[in-house]
Length: 187
Picture 1: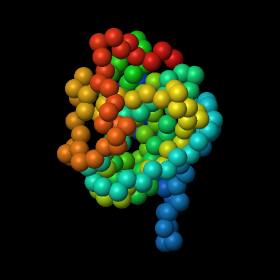
Picture 2: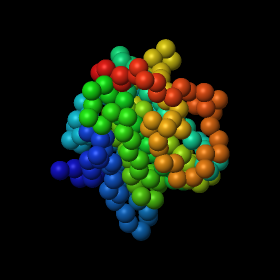
Picture 3: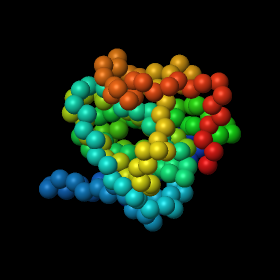
């Protein structure tokens, strides 16, 4: 059992909500974002290849839904370090019993929650307040030729975004919806 993290299964196999267990005293708090030994509990046996930081200025903005195809598929460990977001993972794994289902968690610095998103999932989020910052630990390098995406408003996925979507990047707003022939990501 982990000393620094509480790993909670979600309804999608391999996707975990992780609550960090901060140590607090009169000075403030200390929490760990990652420990390779403890993350083995959720099946993470890779190494972190990149650490990314995003800043999103406007409440209601949606980023995503992004993923990478093999051999550059990636596990993401996502934490909100400022503000709060509605963080979403969509199962795109071929032959998965939860194919095209999504799960969301509110991530914020206050709740000390993280989402562990395995290979084969698309990821996106909506900011619930202005000036949100996310930290992503990623198991693979960014490979532009292997990137993929799904439109965040695709009716086949039907994500119930909590706020009106006020802003998306050109790249995200022009992503395709899932078509009939899409069989998922083969891992």
